[in-house]
Image (cartoon, rainbow, N blue to C red; front, side):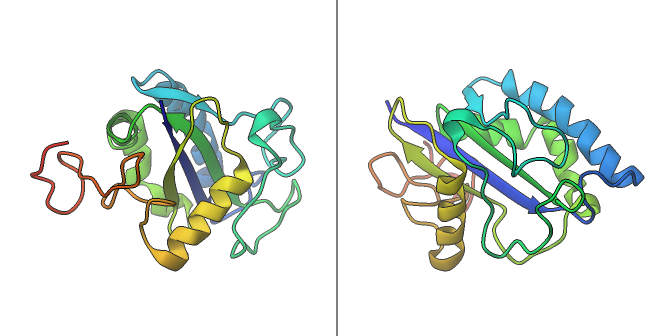
Length: 185
């Protein structure tokens, strides 16, 4: 059974190691958000570095998730002192559980504050795609899909909540999500 991959990417207003209160606040809430999301129905797994510390994303061992990568338009640093980004890569059973996890609870509260922490870049900040059972998506996969979404819009290869696709590549609608959200799943 196919699984849904989700890659998120945002450029922070200051480096992860910055002791400023907003950066510290974002990092601190991130741990609680991950714990909450990881208990959500439909959640399967997320990329987690074996040896990462705040700001060491590029040097970390990500195991099966591959070498850490970022979109070509990310222009801030890549060292521990200069990295100013937040990225996630996760697997879900379906779109509805992922949507519910993102838009409810603690994650929703954090999402409401995103512009306190993140720059507005004019680029998409998340992308979905389907992967075969047993396949672990890589960071490079996520970057390629996000860049494809930016260049081509929502298509079966790379899509968003408002314009989703089923595993077979057909356009679909999820009740309560996106345009014409009155349609049933």
